[in-house]
Length: 167
Image (cartoon, rainbow, N blue to C red; front, side, top):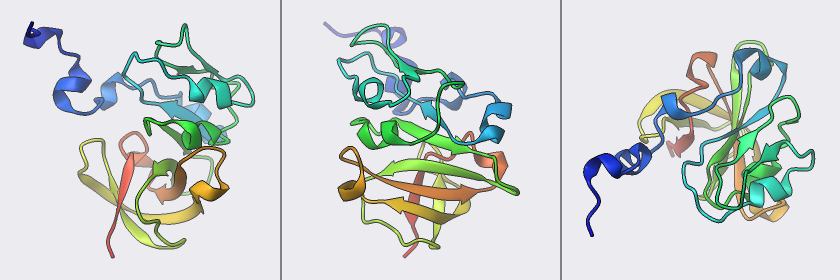
């Protein structure tokens, strides 16, 4: 049986979760240090983020639930980013002067520290340039995913969710 268009979730019909549907931490919290942001729209049996969180900051109502973050408990350690098989978790940190850092999962050829990259929004469109600050390879990760930390201008912290190497 075919679904009617209005029954298809917005993220599924667009191919990405629109920014206005994402529960971001309060701006004041991002100024305090890194904090996890979960952009997981699917209700599927998956809980590595909740299981891997060393401080119990991620909670799910049940195995099929959408995870939520207690931003007061979250330390921004990025272990959940490394363990999310859906690549749906990021950490945001605006505590440094002049910009923000985004730690994101990355499964392509890793860039170099200091490399300039294109910072992309959820649609894959470039929104600004970024500088790679840190890299954690999957071999050094607690999960199966490498992470890349980039520095971006603060005004793009709610938009940037991926990178494209320019080399």
